[in-house]
Length: 246
Image (cartoon, rainbow, N blue to C red; front, side):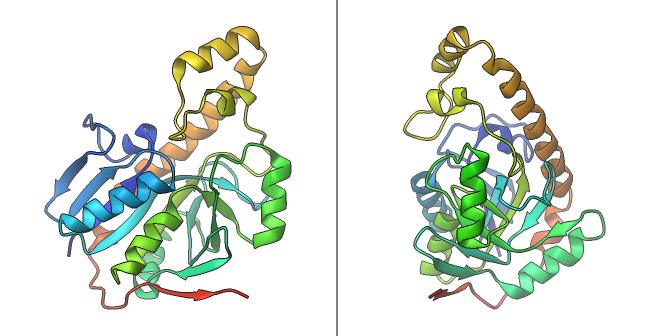
């Protein structure tokens, strides 16, 4: 079996390899594992997932960071979703056997938080909005790509998992500079960021703090990556299932 990892951001990519990969490209770690650097957002994640399947991938992993919706989660905490919820309350259940195997493997070295991972169509920057999403969905965390990857997996009847690590906590407001400097692909445009900082220098502290939180998350992802061979060396026969949550 060949496993495909979909990674949205270049910073998340560095937790898997030091190879320079262009957005939209792929890197073969070995004959059983392929990384796709998709770029941010659902559209990019969908395209990368479909391209991985065209290359022979038989199961998919959403890899990277997430925002916490549960106030018990802190930066660097591992979230191994056992259920995913999209913006229309459409529910996805991950492969149970594979999930149990990964949880059992990682529990030896990490605290594994399981629960609902929900979808965000854009960056949720305010603590108030995160808390509202928590109340509406009951989810413990959110990201922008996992649902899109899960949908492609479901369409092709392939197993799927989301392995995410918390970057920003539920009580953390993201700096205004982040939303200002984003392009339509959900990526930071450095010239816009620097211009915003020039006009709003007090934003620098928030960016530094966010960077520190993100580095903590990357440290956990790197530690998990050491176990990737064990995580994917598992025979799978059950595919992703889904249902409508009323």
